[in-house]
Image (cartoon, rainbow over all chains, first blue to last red; front, side):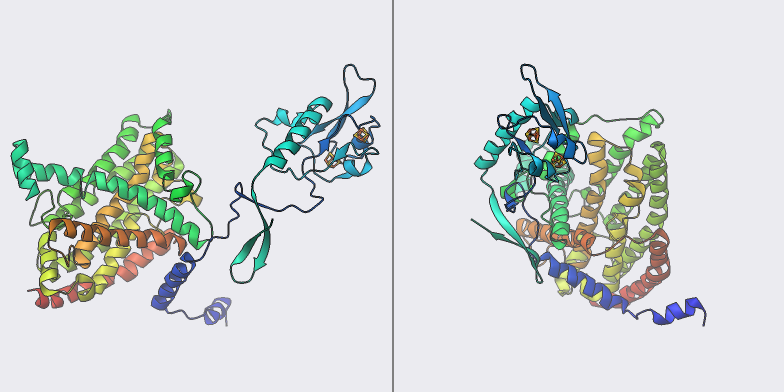
Length: 170
Length: 337
Ligand code: SF4
Ligand code: SF4
């Protein structure tokens, strides 16, 4: 037997009329199912406790040891000279950050911390690069805004029947 | 009748008022516009539901995104129309306008209900067919005038597919004409109402052929080879932007509307079971809306056929079937004689 014959013999036999009807019936069956989209800006998945989002920086706690800049794998943190300040302070490039959280671990004074903010939008690439003072300000702003958010929080569950299910949490 | 009274008030002959209202109000442009907006929304929504998505939503969450198309329309209206330097300017701009105009002409003879038509002719089926076959010519010209390889390929595909689709459509219409013994839509509907047997029952093969040819001519999945988004961007309409793009997008839906109306009249009994103008018009509209919704729903079910597969399907399978439908029509003529 040649390859082609073999292939032809192994083709499943399909009734052309019934198969089309079956396909259309399947389509109609799925038409009645509920969508499993997470309606994101109205609804959000509840983040785990130590979710590593935007890194927030407290200028007042920082002692300028520059350990964070040394540990940062993609070099998202650079040390800056701030006018009127004797010590160097870290600045942050949010576009480079891979959210590994190493900087928050190594910071001796807990000046750096993780936050659940992960969806801040920046319109220009330059506006994602913060010097120490800007970083301190935006950190404060983001944390405040996040506390004010009134989104419905849900937990995603994998369901054999519908695919994905979202259970609301308080 | 309302129409006669209105004609008296306006001091115009009734036939002129009819010829004016039918293509512009119902079944023509005004209703057409609403239908096209609804249909595109329904198409996107249905495809989304089958894939367990939500579809257009955030433009108007309360209406489930029904205003999305109006937002899109506003955007197209404000957008710049880009005519690039290598195009054949005149044909490029005239293409969509001419096509759209050709496609609104059939509504002068397509009846939208009992006594609702622009002109009544003994050859209305032939007129509708002839007017619908004008549009591919301008579509091919649009592909040529765009001076773009995707548009060119799209135009070529349109030429190939139109030939195969229109033959099938012609055979289906011919068998229907043989069956009812008339080339007039109104008489065809009256014969169906008189005997109580709709065309779908008496000649299902012709109905199937008509429906498949309709899918092909209006670029519905599985025959959306002319548009072929993943292969050739938008086919002959690739280079268009702004209002002209909105027109090109409407072309297929207008054609779909005209053909669904014809399908309703020929196979689904037209305005049966009603005889008053208002209820009859609603009946015709709802029936053709169901046909349209079904044909756009197929987008969620099928994949796209290849060009050779579609040609093979139409010439090798449906073309012979067309003669069977014709023979069946001649036999069934006894019922309607
Ligand atoms: S989270 Fe990781 S990548 Fe981001 S700044 Fe800290 S160390 Fe650098
Ligand atoms: S590791 Fe902490 S204390 Fe040291 S420079 Fe960075 S932020 Fe400041």
